[in-house]
Image 1 (cartoon, one colour):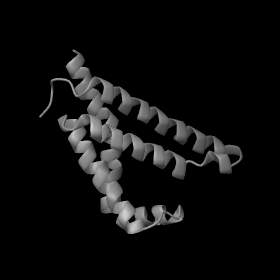
Image 2: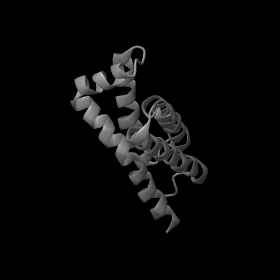
Image 3: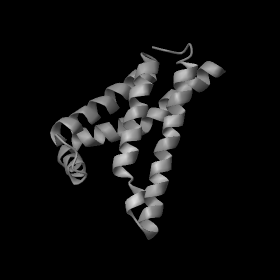
Length: 126
């Protein structure tokens, strides 16, 4: 059963990244506006790198390939995203609460990646 849980876990943890990467690819200008709003340097390159990491990284994790390095990259990306896009420390009231929740959701996802890095892909790989 552990191998089945690991496969299901790999799929579930990357659904967010696959959906986000595909949406950003299909709606590139919207993604670019989001990146520019946070004043990230080289916005086109940053968005393109994000799309590639989310889609390719997600596919690799589902397949069970390069699980440790890909999970580490996605964990670091998720941490950077949490800090840049969920800057709750600059907000007050309801917007702060929403941002704080998003921040800790991202931190929780990092926990899932760390568990996956420790456990490995299991035996169900492509």
